[in-house]
Each structure stands twice: as structure tokens, then as C-alpha cells.
Length: 194
Image (cartoon, rainbow, N blue to C red; front, side, top):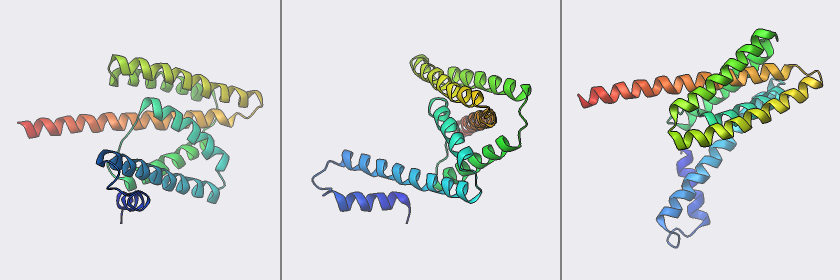
């Protein structure tokens, strides 16, 4: 039984679907499915963070990663299990990279470069109206994240810079993967049309 069926059963149990419009029922199914997927994926992430004793690093990585991904985008997969597996892999790869990265000027410079690449990605993938919306919010997001990083640096907790670096790196790689996926999808559509 998949999450779609579970969410349908729960909604059917809670509501008398004959009294609720079909459109609203579909929205309820979808929203509940998204909530269940988020709970499962986050629970797996936190469980692994506890097992590997990386809770603080994981939480900061998640904060940075999620904030950036909301406004930048990234790779989108068709099935929940693929997304859950890849998301958790990315999170723990990001935490591992943060732990193993030696802080130096190259890391700081590369982080700044990657942030500029993310702004450029948003500019190229959105139409004018969307671009204005996302760039404005992405700027606020970056300022907020840099505020957190600056606060930790003032407390001499420099590891936060490595976590920011790894989260920006993972978002950039996800954007590149999505871009490649779209190119391949375009090529596939061209072959089907010919």
C-alpha cells in the first residue's frame, strides 16, 4: 500500500466524501500525502542524525538547505521513495562534506561563487515575474542565513561556514542535475516528435 492510498483512506474516513466536492477531496488527498511524505522523510533524517551523533550539523544543514531549495529549486523526482532516498543521501553527504572540509579562504570564496551561481540559475530558469519574486526572496534568505553564520563566527563556531558551504554545494549540484534532466527530457520529446 502506498502513501497515496493511505491518504485517501484517511480522508475518506474523516470526511463523508459525498458531501465534499471532488475538487476539495483531491486537494485533501494531495495535502495529506505531502504531509505524510514530509513526516516520513524527516523522521528518517533525524533517526540517522541521532544514530551517527550528528544532530546539530544535520539541523543546520537542513535549515540552510531547505531555505535555499524553496527559492532556487533543484532536482525533482517522480516517486516518493526516490526522493526520500536521494534527499537523505544528499543530507548526509552534505554533513560529511562539512565535517571533512578544512576551513580556508578557498572554501569561503567557493561558497560565495556558488551562491552567485544560484542567483544566476534563478535568473535563467524563471520568467520575468517569477524571477523578480524568487530573487527578492532568495536575497532575504541569503541575508538571514549569513546572519546566522555571522553570529556563529562571532562565537568562534567556525564549523557553521563548512555547513553553509556543503548545503550550497548540494543545492547547486541538485540544480545542475535538474537542468540535465530537463535537457534530456527535451531531447526525448524531440525524438518522439520526429
